[in-house]
Image 1: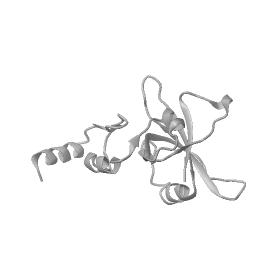
Image 2: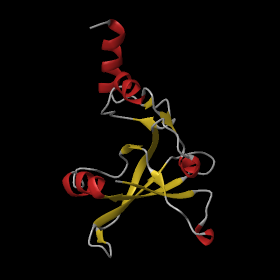
Image 3: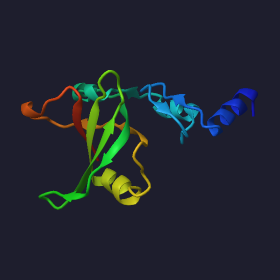
Image 4: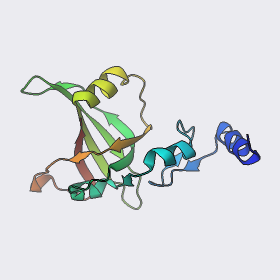
Length: 150
């Protein structure tokens, strides 16, 4: 292992704060190394919450990154399928943007049912290809966006 790598590992173990390069979020106790994260992001583009409405039909996968601050209770739709809303912030300054994310289908099963008890407020999430929900004009907001993942 190189000196640089060892120094990086030691800094991480000491609890140093790192800056996530795509979102600018400050990370402490990172679960995925910066090198591995760069590999995972290869071929994908980072999008801010407020840009989700404008993704269009791009073939390039999009990733939104945010900090979990609220987990709703599971609900059942008219068709009998279950879903839940989780809320995220990007801590953008001067005005943080918010994302209310609808988890349904496999996302509901995987995150809410299987991992929901182990996910804590303050956890940083990367959401692959979130689909912006249509907002009614009276619900429009520059800081609150709704989206879903399946």
